[in-house]
Length: 109
Image 1: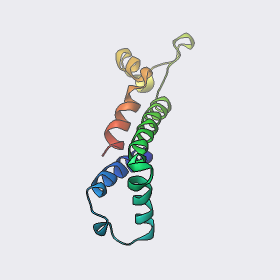
Image 2: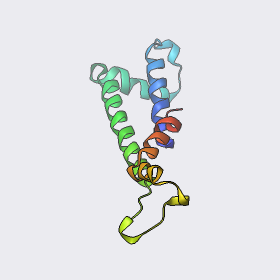
Image 3: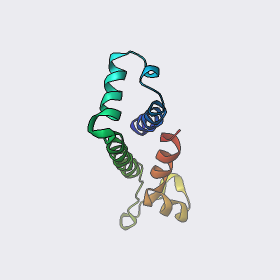
């Protein structure tokens, strides 16, 4: 989820820096190199390409976290519900939606 948070922060930062002039961007070597790659090369097409790749990475992180946090109970083995929760709540946990909710809320903060 920290990867999602960093990607969200990078999106905000890149769009904020896009509004600045070259003089306002400072003189740090890494900052100038990043600005050159994103805004100047390929006629400025690197920023949209980064945004598409960022979104694909975020979606992948959502699926991974959802899969990791899924708590499936095998009914054939007569396993009891997690923490003796009622069946409707256990069915919700079996779908993995809580991972997507956690990633969406906490990763996007």
